[in-house]
Image (tube, rainbow over the protein chains, first blue to last red):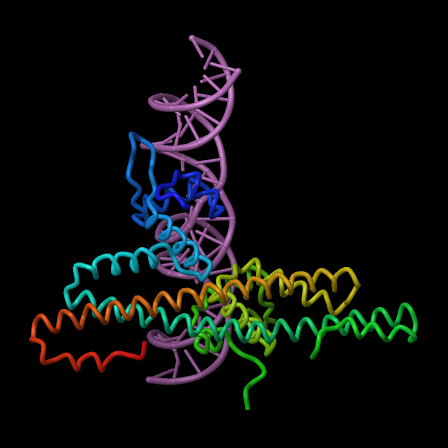
Length: 145
Length: 145
DNA sequence: TTTTTGCTTTACGTTTACGTAAACTTCCTC
DNA sequence: GAGGAAGTTTACGTAAACGTAAAGCAAAAA
């Protein structure tokens, strides 16, 4: 069974970040570990937050952006209509941004595929120059076009 | 017909970046405009490079990363086998990274959808508290679950 | 001809996201 | 009870990606 509390190095180990980073995230109000004496104790929700922080980072979110989302989400439980509407617009914004990212990724993938193929072509040509024409079967090592 | 050369402000305008940024990219060896006297003249390939730089940025690539790819691509035309193999591995790396990003985006999209729905639920509850039960049709404004 | 407009270089400033070092406590082990 | 491992705070340092101001040239417009 997964534990319900974690030490700083538990989380650092699991997600491959430094303890320095985790303390920095706390400093930036992204995590709120409790304390036993001096030492930090992280809860399950803290762990989830950390995972979200890191995923956000991989997608180019700044810590400030992620914190803003966390805050909106937290405040939304106290639920004034204005808060909820604000949260909705932020959610829409992020969804649009993700759509854009999907486009970017799709285009880059196409370009990488094309680059890959040209690269393979060039390698095949080099091979034929070196070993003569009888080795044209090397083309079989290439992926489908 | 699209022109084959561009001024710095042409590109800044088209891609909505500052001229400062473009000069910085040149400084970092990502762009290589020629000069007429003092002023920079950008070619079609320069324009393409700029577009790739910005797309890379949106996906969280550093300028150094992007430059490395450019360099590998440029060197690959002079085509020693070692260069080509290096380029291939870099291409594979980027493709894997993009796959990871696709996963991240998919998961975040799911979470945003879920957040959106909980948000809409909360808004509906607020509305019913305020206006009585006869307005339950508001649920129709919600997207499909 | 002055003025505006656009471009240039040089250079210091700024924000983000940590790294790194110093100096200290706490707990565990031997 | 000496040492080591893991935790802590405080604080200065750093790399990336520009922003911003200063000071100047050069062509086009008024």
